[in-house]
Amino acid sequence: MFLLYIIVGCSNKRVKWPINGTTIEATKYKIALSDSSKILTKNGDSYILLSPNDSLLVSKFTIHYSAVDTNANLYFRSNAERQVKNTLNPNLTEYYKSDNGNVLFVGYSSGDSSKPYTIFEPPLIISPQVINKEIKSTGVMRTFIKEKNAFDEGFKTKLTVKEIGEIKLFGKTETYSLRELTLSRDATISYGENNLIVPEAIMFRTKLLVDQNGYPVAEWSVKAEKSETAETMGNEEKRELYIELIKYKEIISGRN
Image (cartoon, rainbow, N blue to C red; front, side, top):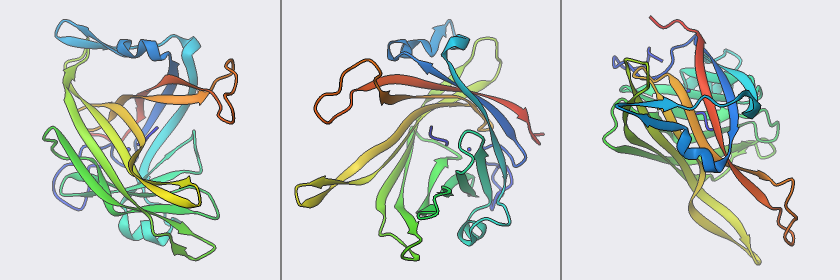
């Protein structure tokens, strides 16, 4: 899950993102891979967003958007304007800033004492003011290593935001934006006595439905988990693919 979550910014352009003080309720479902085509189904000139049965519900949690805490790491206090936290992973805090109407992903803190935070240099565009089919941004993903009191060399990272199209949901009057977000980076794998660099290995890819203000409505992506029924093959565990669907509902907001 990626994420991946400001009207007041460092420019006079209104960014498409939840404003500080917003809390959103999220409901996560596990959907069979074969049912992926049912998530959005055509209904005349509009679409119907799947409402899964409660038996498919995995968890409920909330996401909160706010200004950067005064006790946050100095790097984020200096380079970010807002933070996003969720109750599903309370140790994780994501940091963002706005620039010329775009929302940029600055980095995150993990709660891991040995690797307390990761940054993107430069920050990656996660919510563009305008998308002409797709927009790509690149940076170096660097993690602070406490034992060395320094950042690692990092890996080249790319975030692609692709506009699939604008749609209308059944029973709604407003138009929604359907996007695909892909985060990839160079990865290191062991090969014999050496390490190989695999360019642009995908870290996550998700489809995201947002309203015209940038507030999330739903997102879904393919996930894998250990199969409980299949036998292991050699040293490799059998993995089972499924669709993770998250539906969002705004419950508290300072939106005008």
